[in-house]
Length: 260
Image 1 (cartoon, helix red, strand yellow):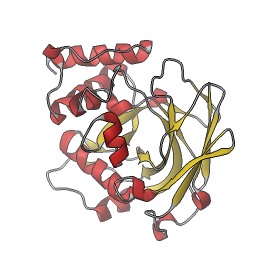
Image 2: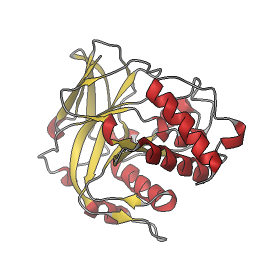
Image 3: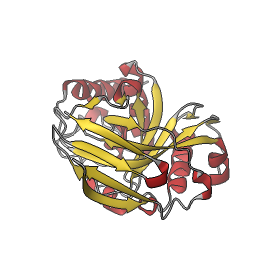
Image 4: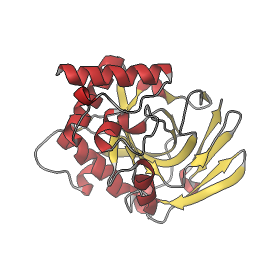
């Protein structure tokens, strides 16, 4: 670890914990490329003291990439204390994004470690043992997150904040067309938007394969027992304290969050 990486990580984690914001990381510790962003992200994880229970993908749609000012997806860790049990309130205090997202989430029954050769989609699907509906409530530690660029967003855990994992589906998801499979978002039990798996890099299976290979390149790979949430299928839904948000994936099940 370099001093600059540690300085950047400490700034980001402090602002996350205190629910405060910065304009950008100081020039002397600002990551300048994707590799430096992931190295800083890893230091954020280390000093947090939290286990990584999974990974998220930010900006898996063209609209999402435009929204945060990047030209491709980003990977970020899901820390244990940020993954909430079903029924637990989701705090919105200090959150500047104030949106909820409906996502396909995969659970890995087999590790896919770092290695030189890329993993194929078949490799990745063989390592997955469950599909879950999920809700992400993202946030950023930057005032204007659409202007800081991919390396700083990666360092900031790719806009991770809160995550709610629904129960594993009993449906035979491997036999279904995930591209056309529809997810519907409900806010306070009123329809708030819908979308399909096509909105996450064209196919949730493509998205999860991208994530595995991103970590193969820039991290330590995927560990058995970790989850990967593949990005929002619907246009993010604006939320406020007192709202309920439900992501309904039809035969794959649903998951609900209570916003406070």
